[in-house]
Amino acid sequence: MELVQFKESIHEVHGMKVMLDIDLTRIYEVETRVWKQAVRMNIDRFPSDFMFELTEKEMTNLTSQNVTSSWGGQRYKSFALIEWIILVFLIK
Image (tube, rainbow, N blue to C red; front, side):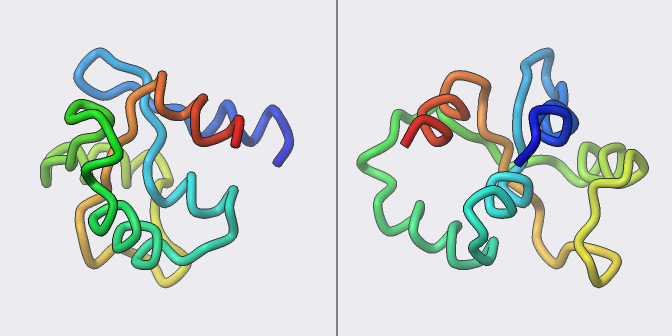
């Protein structure tokens, strides 16, 4: 992934820089549902504050900024991964 594309994947929510699960799964080339399932099955390996689920309003705001899936919408609310955990995922 080019640096410019990576920077476009960073959003500000709750005053924090975050990356959405959908963007992270594009980097790793896995389905979002597979990623979410893996995180849930291994949730004890992560700090409690590494991500949060977006509200409906936040999803609407980000969707208006072109954060949508290829079929035109997302079935589930996205998870936002906070800035420091993004670096951990990208380093591995």
